[in-house]
Length: 166
Image (cartoon, rainbow, N blue to C red; front, top):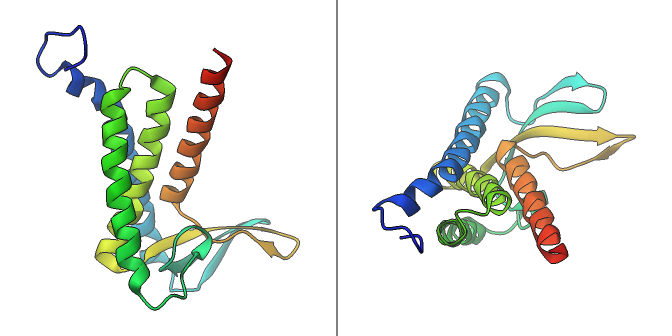
């Protein structure tokens, strides 16, 4: 229970917005991946604007395809990391349920982690489909879950910087 609160379930209710945010991220991530899987063949690109394409890519590694060319052990490793991160995030959400910016950051990271975890468990790889490039330089393909993790990390950094000023 939250300190100073005698009402049963009060601490759980404080988590609802952050778990709802994570759920929205997971749903958007999985719906967008399903649409791309139905629309494109592996490696196929669909230009959208001069610096952005849709592409169907499978990533067995982590961010920026880190360890993608490893022998297969990385799947279990990244699943374990995602499960551990999920547990840690849930713990932090319970402890800091009233810190809105911090919890919003955690909610985005949680949703992204679960979205990519789902891919790893069910498909054996993560589906990436957003490709940004300029002047022959390409940013590695990414997805909605990756974007949510990046937004969440940015919010956590912002929260940390704000806390230092206080």
